[in-house]
Length: 306
Ligand code: CP
Ligand code: NVA
Image 1 (cartoon, rainbow, N blue to C red):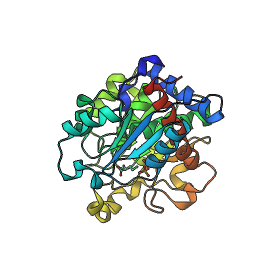
Image 2 (cartoon, rainbow, N blue to C red; image 1 turned 120 degrees about the vertical axis):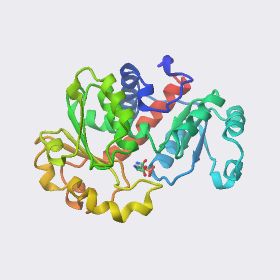
Image 3 (cartoon, rainbow, N blue to C red; image 1 turned 90 degrees about the horizontal axis):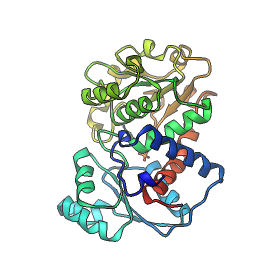
Image 4 (cartoon, helix red, strand yellow; image 1 turned 120 degrees about the horizontal axis):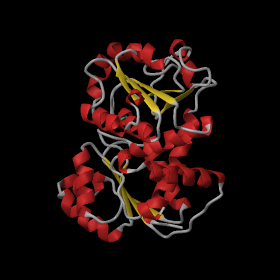
């Protein structure tokens, strides 16, 4: 655990497989109540975008670690009035022990990390959503008892969640398939990074065929078709993404043991049907719960608790 002390988590690929294993094992122990911490640390939350799960799960996790949380709402702090990030970062560094940021540009969290010594956590950018993927991997491991060798298929927009799933899944030895329509495929640099991390070329598949990607998969995963900041494109995207909807027909192509995940919030009858969301293969609510356990473990590691 000590190797993570003082580090940032800006991308899921900031973790080695061994470090990811440490976080996932601790998350599992915390969930079972086999481990407890009693710290007096302060977490700052600087969120430029809406959030239910990330905000609440980080807050409760820090309270359960014995610490405190300060909500640095940009509309009520000087960053919202244009104070440079470099200045804000250096000042917050003097007050807080750890800071989770949700924003648009990955470069902005990199600036925070450059100008402060406390751990900076990416609580979602346009490029990545690493904390989500920690919880996803925990959920998959709870269902299958392992990660390596499993096939995870993500269907929909090649967005932040797709990027972190691709990197995180491959790091842990999974086969990751991303099925997206033309023009919405994942970022080429992220795909290249995942290919470089993969032990075998077949671990990374990017395709436009939802059906091929779903065949014999162990996990079917989707996310909203228009992310925060893309709301104006919502209507025009619906017909483009329709073939990528997770519905019972697609689930039938996957492995019999397959589980269904969605990071939430979900739009029923758009990226996923209500039938599948509420069906026996859905692990969506466990996945949401695991945000809290995984982030508690992450913060304990970055703060060097224990
Ligand atoms: N999945 C997720 O990050 O949810 P919130 O936007 O509600 O935090
Ligand atoms: N891709 C979505 C994830 C929300 C948790 C977004 O960025 O809005």
